Image 1 (cartoon, rainbow, N blue to C red):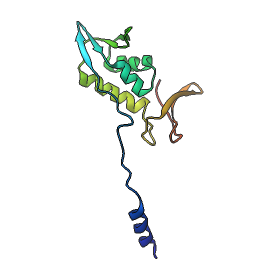
Image 2 (tube, one colour; image 1 turned 30 degrees about the horizontal axis):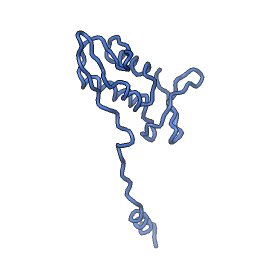
Image 3 (spheres, rainbow, N blue to C red; image 1 turned 135 degrees about the vertical axis):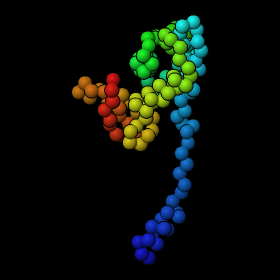
Image 4 (cartoon, rainbow, N blue to C red; image 1 turned 90 degrees about the horizontal axis):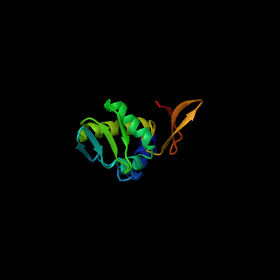
Length: 134
């Protein structure tokens, strides 16, 4: 049996691997306007799904949206100004890409650690390390 025959046989016997998005599904932001503020109602659910510190996420949102904000006693993020659901969803997606998903394997099994004072995204699934901003 030559190489091509062996390769074809191996490909035929390899099971299909189906990806599933059920494992990591960030909830769509539920936002509403309250006066001159935008209230991110399900902020705590988002933070829990991302597995990150709520202060880190709200600081990122503030920087991305160019506004100030805080987390109220109910766990909702209150952002000064009017921001639509799409704009906040885009910012959460950008946060997820930069601070949650592994650059190598794409899995969300990561932690932010400091190595010699530099923040590093460490993947617990594949062991990859990548520098990230604070």
